[in-house]
Length: 259
Ligand SMILES: [Fe+2]
Image: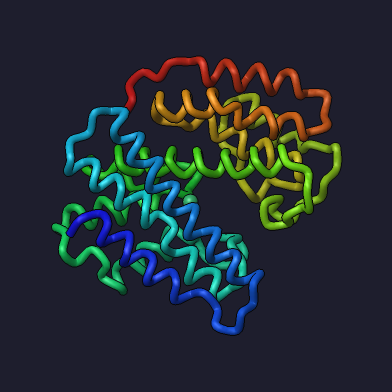
């Protein structure tokens, strides 16, 4: 099967979650995840091409990007939220969905396992399934996802308009930032969602993802598009300049090996 066949399978499955009762706000959430998945598919392709992938590698990277959030649809339909800590980890649910629906039944078991690992790993603080065959694909998927999330949040903070509680994780918009969050950021560590108390904490958690990027391609695109400037600008705190410096240093720092 070609990648276009899989895009059709993805669309057919995810369209089945559009609610028949015309509830636009619920449908909108499903559509957002459909569009996000297709952009992550494209980002994963571009990252794979940037490391001179062959056709087979490119195809698997595309499958990982396309299906990485497949668990989001069942998650939203069951729990009406995308918050994993209030429902279920969507990466684990995604693997279950892939196995139940047998979308990849025409691919080898090895390819299936790689895609399952990438889906499982993509939303964790750290990669857990470190199989030799799948590790690079997990890294591609994580970077591809982050590029799109940065794009979405940059657009959100650049354009004045109604606030979207889902994009702000429902957190209070105060000038306060938690010590543990600042501390982790200073040490270039990932920030755990359980430590978030304010919207500034949440923004810094997203910015800290730059310490966990795996490919030059990703760093370059985030720098080029200045995705993080808009986020930092929207934080009314004295540490802004220091955060900018950390971002620029990290994006300018070369990677030991792109995968
Ligand atoms: Fe995603």
